[in-house]
Amino acid sequence: MNMQRGRLVSGGRLQVPAEMRRALELQDGDEVRMEIVDGELRVIPFREVIRRVQEQFRRDAPRGVSHVDDFIAERRAEAERELG
Image 1 (cartoon, rainbow, N blue to C red):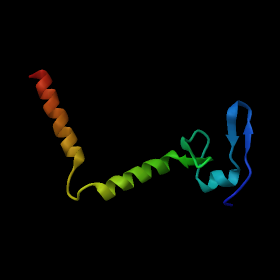
Image 2 (cartoon, rainbow, N blue to C red; image 1 turned 45 degrees about the vertical axis):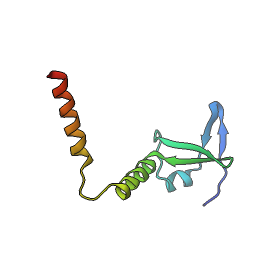
Image 3 (cartoon, rainbow, N blue to C red; image 1 turned 90 degrees about the vertical axis):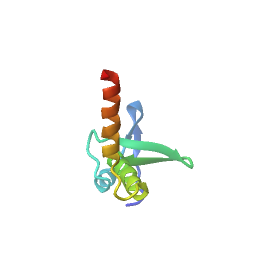
Image 4 (cartoon, helix red, strand yellow; image 1 turned 180 degrees about the vertical axis):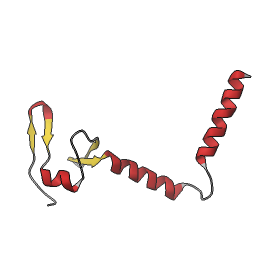
């Protein structure tokens, strides 16, 4: 199933075979990221892009540090300065 034949149809739309859509769990309207790598079109479900970014942050973020708390504190300080 690694390689199948698709078709470029009117308007530049690419028909992706049903078996490949099922394998990628793609539904009508799902967003994908497309990139050209070494002359090939790579299509990645956007939810997979998000999962990879989250995983990267999990690996790189120091343990026990809440960036959310830091962000909220920064926003509160900024709001106080604006109202101040």
